[in-house]
Image (cartoon, rainbow, N blue to C red; front, side, top):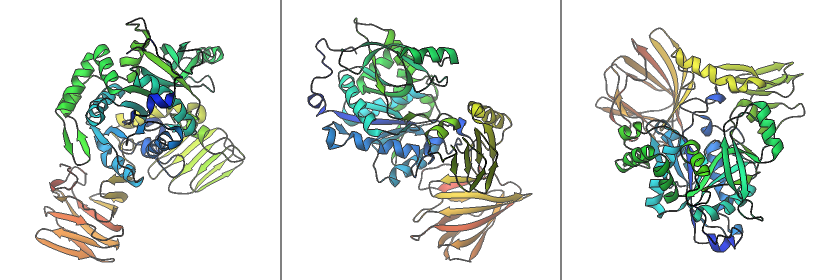
Length: 507
């Protein structure tokens, strides 16, 4: 895993890479709790359109376009391979479809085990797809404002990765941030080369230490972006964390394909220890001189990067008005400055605000000072401890067939607005504890009720008694919208017995 004795990093990059396959690996397993209430466990920040019309995940995929351009005579860049939470599988697949792209695969994690096991699963699939391609490993929730600069640094890093090195990219620090880990740069690989040997990885520092790091010019922020061959990673994880390597290999080998997804063995993966790429391998590789050569290298990256790790970070990277405010939605700001104001469902009026963050959603409002942006996680922890659901779901809940949104509820009743995509169908199901009334307000519905099957048009309705098997489908080319009134002694979403489901879901 070290450098070849005659390695020349500036020796015709074109010759080194022209036959190389780059396999992007996008890790999409985070929950983004520090961006609550917009980010929820079942609809996390990487799926949100926080900057522009595309989600952070979609922007990550689009970033690959410049990398694969003819301009750089670069290597062949394959379609992205994604690793995501099983609960997000249809959302992730739909966002890739909306871009008109095809993925190389979507690996589903039954539980979160951090980035090292996720990357190990991906490396096994990469070996099957391309026989030891170079992996470009990127989190799904980062922002890079200058993709051309990013691509140029990746081109340089790919030379080393192709020759068996563990490559990471460190962000040129713009301020003494305490929310990031740092990488200390060692000696340059060659005097004219951009890359350096990694000296050490450093944990998140206090404010004074961070100032010293930035002033020294030796430190970079740890971006969490990596490059290495799949075989290099599998060798490294087996050497430094054989327990992770063994468990992940077993989970992958005994997995199975399900439509566009690859399901790893859930029991084997639950047994896998949790650890990050940095802790599991990179820190150890930096200090391991095995054959007298450094195993980890870092390239400085100055491309307008942010991990959007808190609301204050979103304010920093967003377009601001003449008063320094970032405003989204139906917002009226008076005598306010340097604030982030987001309204999703109603008018938000901010008066005399400075350095404030106000986020309004359908079921929650959060108000805080920017200096306390890292404390949002405590609200999420409280919601979990109180067994509330606002940390998990939005009022609008997305499903592979469309979405539903709670409108009203009370004792023994609940009202929902249901939207079904063209050609989509809910599962054939029944409920033990509730009856349902459906009123079509837009489009056409095909209804299965017991042994009957019939169509409903706008302003028509039907009734589904307790215990009757039923299915709702949209046979048309337009969205189907209907109002559902549920009544009964128990109205929870777990009162569903599925008999048939085109999406492979179980009760």
